[in-house]
Length: 387
Image (cartoon, rainbow, N blue to C red; front, side):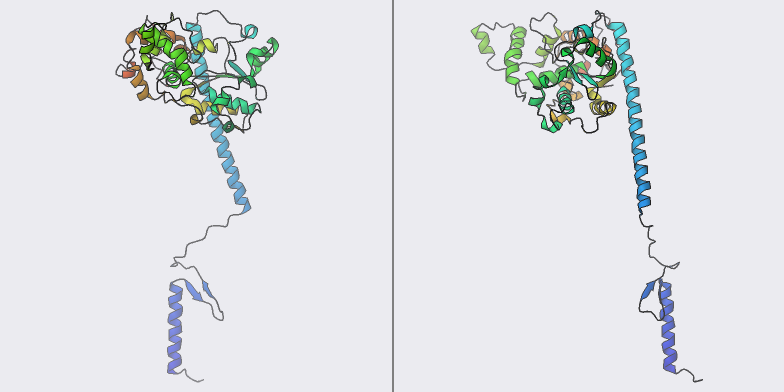
């Protein structure tokens, strides 16, 4: 047997060193192979690959997602029902304690004008109140009724002039009224009276209003409030010259609204909700609030099994930012104490029935003129501004 030469031994040594080196970094060259195969060792830094995504894994993920979504929806509905139970209890107690008017037979006499809107397909009855997202709810009912395909197709102008296209409670026969009151989901939306009143002023009567029909409101209502408060004679030429520049102030508007003996008729945009929707005579299933508008609207649509219509965003209407506390303070701190007390008297039933309070801490400038006792009125102490 012939001994390996010096050069052969050197080559073998180099080969062994290469093999040892490659094994150290996790690569081994398989003999008689044209391919270098990467082999993971305890020293290898090559990351482990995740198991391939199979159709079975996708199904499991989809089921888990659906289960979580169902649980979230159920938790939402349960929480909303508890909220509604509380609101209905407050309303019932308020009617028992503070409503002194005679019972109103809604079935026999209906209700004022077109206040109650009906949708038969989804079994809904809605009492709309101006300045509480009623334009957006009209958009929803117009879509539910098949009159428009999407709420985006309904402008503010169309929504407020399409009432004749909607079914209203007033135009129904007694037997149908009875059926609807007993079987439909009846809902109403309410709002803090001070916030609603400010919204009406800013939208309709304020000198800087951008509302498309603001000029009509100024000419028919705004100027007459100015005449009355400033004791001007509308037939007097000097008085007319004094009103050349329209500058109705919010405190003048509040004085008008809070004065029950004012000769001007009161408008539906600031009429008491208790006088508009008869909450002590109609057993509303859902009491929505402007302060929780999106959640309450979502709850109502789910109750009615409406899946293809979403409640419009606030900017689809004419927002006035009247629920902002800073804005409220800026306007109401100018109102004299007596006028604030008159305003509270007028809206007392709305405060009591819907769980609002005109009072908070004495340090709040918004309420600085409302903290004194008003004919021993009793208010729920633990109710915040926006419950």
